[in-house]
Image 1 (tube, rainbow, N blue to C red):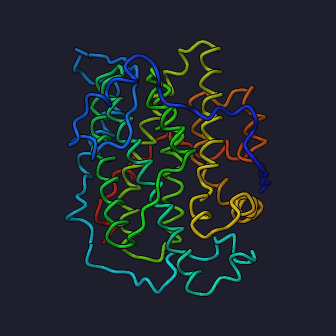
Image 2 (cartoon, rainbow, N blue to C red):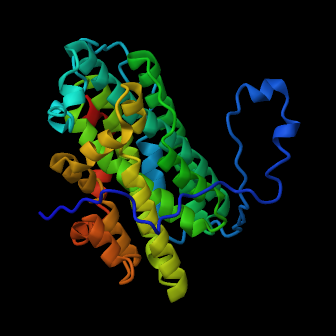
Image 3 (tube, rainbow, N blue to C red):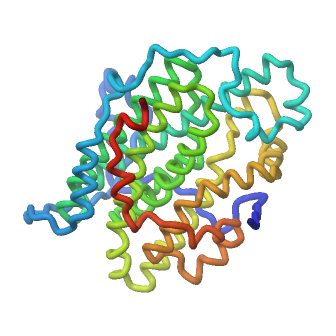
Length: 370
């Protein structure tokens, strides 16, 4: 397998800013002190909603995914065994994926600091999951309004509840089992801002259902194999079941729609998908943890990027995204060389999520977590 690694983001990447149009400067003035303590940041979005007065099902695939979401629902209070505790004296992740094991600033740390790094690294990873899931919660709620079809509105509404549950369960694990909570990574935040504030409903689908959810699904599956805590593995398995449906929904819904776009519109969305992938690769670098341990951030970043194992790990996270982009028609000739430069075009012929594996998606919930 040929792996290519990029030392720094391409110069043509836009780091997105949140909406600053009409109405962006007046909401904070109307907040009372009681509101302010709960609100950290406000964003504005020129969202265009759609009524749909035809309540018949036009797409059996989307309706079936919606029904599966109802059947396979789970409760973070009742279906997760919170009584289990993993000892803080143990390293929480398989150290085979630690790119710093032979790097002097890490190798010379006392054992207790190496252990502390392991827990901080996991906490950072899970915190980004929480922030990404909150973004998914907000985007799914937007899709319930702006998706044109009745079936898509139903599914987006069910996904909104899924995402709320994911925020809840990861937040509780961080608060009760780790006690460390990192802020949102700036690269993830920039992409969430773009998706939430863009008025085009299909771009929201592409950014969230294909890019962010696709990468999260691969990351969850990897973490399930490397996490040492059985409780965390149980949580991830529950979340993965939901995320697999979400990605499948995005691919199936977008596949037909993209074909109705003009060539210029397709190219705009293909370029956005490429830029989103680059931003998400940078989101995988735990800069905030480097700062916590007083390391030179750029040197630590370069070390992480230079690690062949970590390069392969990061690239493998795109094994769901690239085939899905090809399936929906956004792996255009103009962006193919750019994905090749990232080293991830090699995944284009892997299995995509357009062909629904109903048997896998319908497996009983407790068969996975018992």
